[in-house]
Image (tube, rainbow, N blue to C red; front, side, top):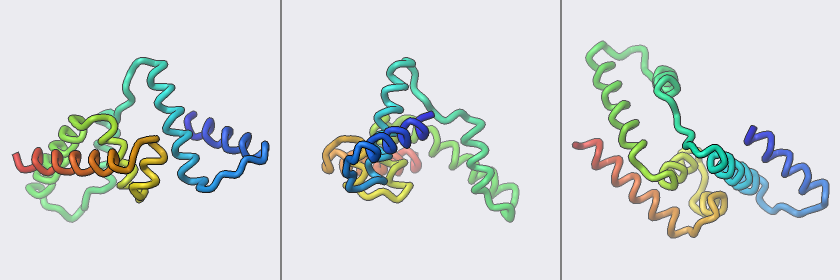
Length: 135
């Protein structure tokens, strides 16, 4: 729904002759804003359910691991998942966009925040994830 709405807005803007300098950033910003509005109107946070995390983990899992390595990797994955959930929504979004390959400037534009906020959110989230991983 979010993707469809974002592309519909892009279509309408282009149809009106509006010049969009960076389409990729523009579309992500529109999608982000639409998702935030949807979430606010529904009064709940959208998060990844445990089954989805497990499916993602299964896709990334190396089939050559022995049972002990598999258990250790699964525990590490669960620990990282718990730590990720403890991050603020802004920190989570910044990390996800960065993991997708977006530059700091693009993330700032999409989230409509300052470049220093992006850098600070990423720094704090990585620091927290590393600290939680070693505890």
